[in-house]
Length: 138
Image (cartoon, rainbow, N blue to C red; front, top):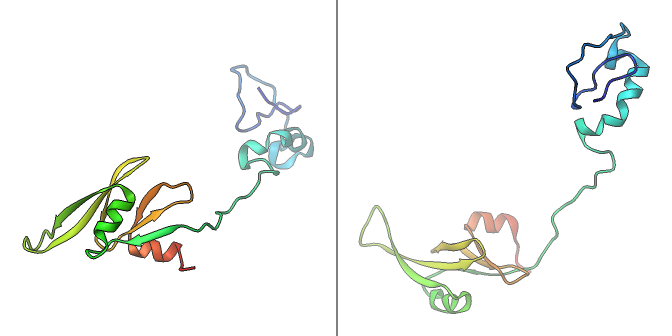
């Protein structure tokens, strides 16, 4: 239970049910003593001042775009299963799809999607616009 020496409750700390005598000092907004008493607890409101900052690592990955021409070779590489997808607007139009086993379960790559082999050997799928935003050719 954290209170200042003048009896003001310090935010984001536990309080008890006791009635406390509170000084008319201006509290945590105006009283320098109350502000000083509350300063060890300020990290609870905005995080510790020594909290490190991170950014994503640049990584190199292998990627293949799923096309009907490359579907068989990609299937052998990733250990997936080739499937046919039917266009919902035109039942005669068929697309190639690929079910790929991943750590999160089986995911489906559709024609045009990129199949990416990550640095640890895991596979994942990105749509073309996501892939082009995140990766560039080396």
